[in-house]
Length: 114
Image 1 (tube, rainbow, N blue to C red):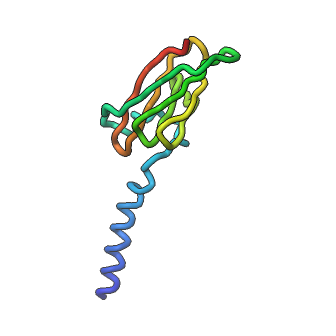
Image 2 (tube, one colour; image 1 turned 45 degrees about the vertical axis):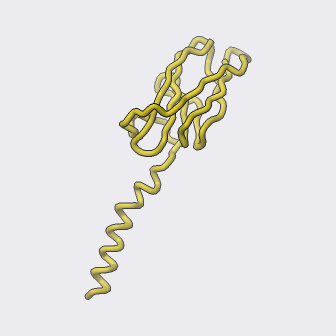
Image 3 (cartoon, helix red, strand yellow; image 1 turned 135 degrees about the horizontal axis):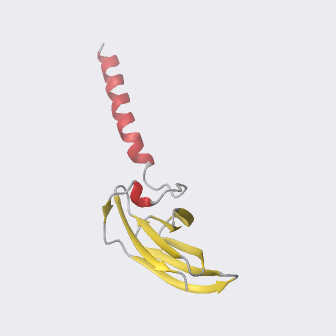
Protein backbone atom coordinates (compact mmCIF):
# COMPACT_ATOMS: atom_id res chain seq x y z
CA UNK A 1 0.00 0.00 0.00
CA UNK A 2 2.82 2.42 0.84
CA UNK A 3 4.43 1.79 -2.56
CA UNK A 4 1.18 2.61 -4.36
CA UNK A 5 0.74 5.88 -2.44
CA UNK A 6 4.37 6.82 -3.10
CA UNK A 7 4.00 6.06 -6.82
CA UNK A 8 0.77 8.10 -7.11
CA UNK A 9 2.38 11.01 -5.25
CA UNK A 10 5.43 10.90 -7.54
CA UNK A 11 3.22 10.77 -10.64
CA UNK A 12 1.18 13.73 -9.43
CA UNK A 13 4.26 15.85 -8.69
CA UNK A 14 5.77 14.97 -12.09
CA UNK A 15 2.59 15.93 -13.94
CA UNK A 16 2.59 19.31 -12.20
CA UNK A 17 6.25 20.06 -12.91
CA UNK A 18 6.39 18.85 -16.52
CA UNK A 19 4.50 21.81 -18.09
CA UNK A 20 6.75 24.30 -16.28
CA UNK A 21 9.86 22.53 -17.53
CA UNK A 22 8.60 22.49 -21.12
CA UNK A 23 7.51 26.16 -21.15
CA UNK A 24 10.99 27.67 -20.93
CA UNK A 25 11.24 28.87 -24.53
CA UNK A 26 8.93 28.05 -27.40
CA UNK A 27 10.05 30.25 -30.28
CA UNK A 28 8.15 27.97 -32.67
CA UNK A 29 4.89 29.50 -31.37
CA UNK A 30 3.18 31.79 -33.87
CA UNK A 31 1.29 33.92 -31.33
CA UNK A 32 2.55 37.11 -29.71
CA UNK A 33 4.56 36.55 -26.53
CA UNK A 34 2.31 38.71 -24.36
CA UNK A 35 -0.48 36.19 -24.94
CA UNK A 36 1.23 33.74 -22.56
CA UNK A 37 3.81 35.95 -20.81
CA UNK A 38 1.92 38.48 -18.72
CA UNK A 39 4.40 40.38 -16.56
CA UNK A 40 6.28 43.11 -18.44
CA UNK A 41 9.87 43.69 -17.30
CA UNK A 42 12.68 46.02 -18.31
CA UNK A 43 14.59 43.32 -20.20
CA UNK A 44 16.88 45.04 -22.69
CA UNK A 45 16.01 45.07 -26.39
CA UNK A 46 18.34 46.58 -28.97
CA UNK A 47 17.25 46.97 -32.62
CA UNK A 48 20.02 48.02 -35.01
CA UNK A 49 19.54 48.60 -38.74
CA UNK A 50 21.95 46.37 -40.66
CA UNK A 51 21.04 47.10 -44.29
CA UNK A 52 18.27 47.07 -46.87
CA UNK A 53 17.69 44.77 -49.81
CA UNK A 54 14.75 44.09 -52.09
CA UNK A 55 12.21 46.15 -50.18
CA UNK A 56 13.14 44.63 -46.82
CA UNK A 57 15.14 46.19 -44.03
CA UNK A 58 17.53 43.94 -42.11
CA UNK A 59 17.81 44.45 -38.36
CA UNK A 60 20.16 42.98 -35.80
CA UNK A 61 18.22 42.09 -32.66
CA UNK A 62 19.96 41.82 -29.28
CA UNK A 63 18.08 41.19 -26.05
CA UNK A 64 18.69 40.38 -22.43
CA UNK A 65 16.24 37.50 -22.75
CA UNK A 66 16.52 33.82 -23.55
CA UNK A 67 14.17 33.93 -26.55
CA UNK A 68 12.93 36.62 -28.94
CA UNK A 69 10.43 37.14 -31.75
CA UNK A 70 9.52 39.81 -34.29
CA UNK A 71 5.92 40.43 -35.36
CA UNK A 72 4.40 42.56 -38.12
CA UNK A 73 0.80 42.79 -36.99
CA UNK A 74 -0.11 39.28 -35.88
CA UNK A 75 2.39 37.61 -38.23
CA UNK A 76 5.60 36.29 -36.72
CA UNK A 77 8.41 36.96 -39.19
CA UNK A 78 11.47 35.96 -37.12
CA UNK A 79 12.49 34.62 -33.74
CA UNK A 80 14.33 31.88 -31.91
CA UNK A 81 15.76 30.78 -28.60
CA UNK A 82 18.80 32.76 -27.52
CA UNK A 83 19.50 36.40 -26.91
CA UNK A 84 19.48 37.67 -30.48
CA UNK A 85 19.73 37.28 -34.22
CA UNK A 86 18.53 39.03 -37.38
CA UNK A 87 15.14 39.87 -38.86
CA UNK A 88 14.14 41.17 -42.28
CA UNK A 89 11.13 43.49 -42.10
CA UNK A 90 9.21 44.86 -45.11
CA UNK A 91 10.11 48.55 -45.53
CA UNK A 92 7.52 50.93 -44.10
CA UNK A 93 5.92 48.31 -41.85
CA UNK A 94 5.55 48.73 -38.09
CA UNK A 95 6.96 45.81 -36.14
CA UNK A 96 7.30 44.68 -32.55
CA UNK A 97 10.25 42.84 -31.04
CA UNK A 98 9.48 40.69 -28.00
CA UNK A 99 12.11 39.42 -25.57
CA UNK A 100 11.16 36.63 -23.18
CA UNK A 101 13.06 35.98 -19.97
CA UNK A 102 11.10 32.97 -18.78
CA UNK A 103 7.53 32.49 -17.77
CA UNK A 104 5.70 34.84 -17.20
CA UNK A 105 8.20 37.64 -17.96
CA UNK A 106 8.60 39.54 -21.26
CA UNK A 107 9.33 42.93 -22.75
CA UNK A 108 8.53 44.47 -26.12
CA UNK A 109 9.73 47.35 -28.28
CA UNK A 110 7.95 48.86 -31.31
CA UNK A 111 9.62 50.30 -34.41
CA UNK A 112 8.85 51.16 -38.04
CA UNK A 113 11.15 49.67 -40.71
CA UNK A 114 13.00 52.44 -42.58
